Length: 416
Image (cartoon, rainbow, N blue to C red; front, side, top):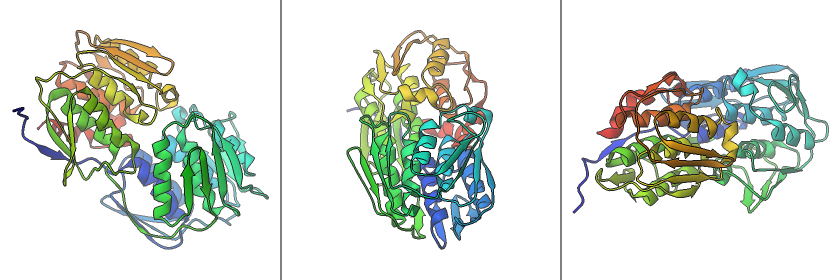
């Protein structure tokens, strides 16, 4: 009979993606909403501070956020919002600005200014909003305000970022006639759009999503009590730690019924040789250290935030791993294909970066100084290799504050 180390339960922060969606809905709703287990980190703080600047009262206690009142969409005031380095925050706020009578300027740090926003800006202009990218077309800073005639249909290519689609969806109930969104043939990160549907419905919106068609009825959000799930993207790190080093680990409160597509990362690890099960405590993974970890071929277009996690896990597999379908992640906080490949090669891995993914072959591994490229997901993934490979140093570990400020305090518990 296979024997594992002692089972242990770890906790991860609330979902950043769900938190940001819930905050937008709550800020538009009339009344007081309580968002429990709201995600910590710089991105969430940037969202909350921006909503305060738009007139919402936000009070926090531990990881509970109470939002009172709602944004005054008729205010003529010009408001400047700083999204800092948060791509999701900036895109959601840009769409939100299209509901305001007064101008809203959305800006952020230099690395965020370099990230693409053009499809969202074009879509907002297409439905009638006033959109002025003052520095460079399709990039921040951008100044947005409500147009005279706001239309109720838009076509949107969904092959670059589901965040554009989600941003439009969340403001759609407040358009005079709602909004119909027709997506392109290839929809990446479909799970994030489904997540947006789930959060919007929890706040009372009428929304349908089938195939490549989305319909959001006109209406208003209702204030509510909303509990945010554990973050499935963050859970990928303790799951991968167990896959790499062996053991028996449960992420507390996480379920296969999650709104988050990234919960499917455990199925990728199961294909590599891990055992996965749902328990009353949460989602559980086990692997005997002596059992081989196998490489796999996998399309990760629907769980792209887990690409760095899988790439590091693949270093310890007995056969090559091929990741495909994720060319769009070159435009994340870093180039998550080229930068990831470059750093893993420093460890001795044989890595080939392709237009849409990576091929990782096991090699003789040794320590090195790894650059995080200002990317929290690279930093958290690279740290998983430190237990198995001596002398790995991260140049900027503090970048994890973007989504999990206490990541390195939690990291030792992944291995108990």
